[in-house]
Image (cartoon, rainbow, N blue to C red; front, side, top):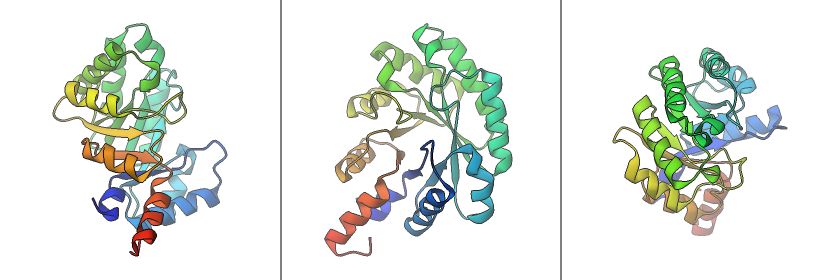
Length: 223
């Protein structure tokens, strides 16, 4: 897989609590240069990025990173993000509801957010590091039934990130219209290639551009 192909699947991410405008500009400039799938940024920067980088596909997070905001708050976050120029929403499920076995409640929340998103992409972060295999399977079904576009492994703020085992599990239990996003701990070129080969449509990471640029330099290419 070429460097260009890998980066076309990357949601180039900057979600640190202390991210400055300078950090966001660097992220956006890199995403433009390397044709990343999107920039994933804090909601407070959406309008400014949309005004300064109209060519970029903007992704943001909702209910992030803990997921236990009430559904109405997540809906309000989503509506504002879309109004500010966001194109893709990465929501965190209510992990407490998942642990309580209230899967239908989680499914209904996802369904309501997808209704707000309409034709915009909704990715559902289930935070796999906190879930049992049975809970992960239940979430694959909930994401599918609710009509979301993606299932996503992790926020990157939990105790672990994406694993090959979890992506293989997703492949078994998600519906045919649900895509996969691996996020959290994707830290090498080999990780990028492996998750893409497993069928992930998107990779969420802050490291990909640097990794691919270094890999390209070692191979003598423009990347």
